[in-house]
Length: 88
Image (cartoon, rainbow, N blue to C red; front, top):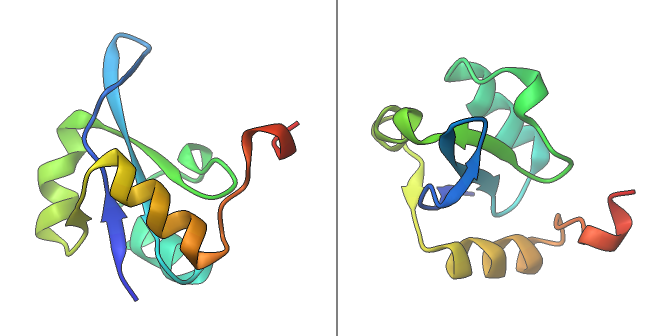
């Protein structure tokens, strides 16, 4: 099992944001997020939104940096992805 993080490309609230996912388990993802002080409100059904400034800390804690494409492919392959149309 691996926790993955992509680059911060997505602007919102005056910052850039990245996504943090697990390639196998939401339990693993939540445990990693809790251990790294990510707030529960950052969880969005299949990923955590993380601010750009948190990336070095998350990578140092074991998150593997990947491209947005690699992250999406891993999330789909894991079966954990929630499609945009199913988010409503």
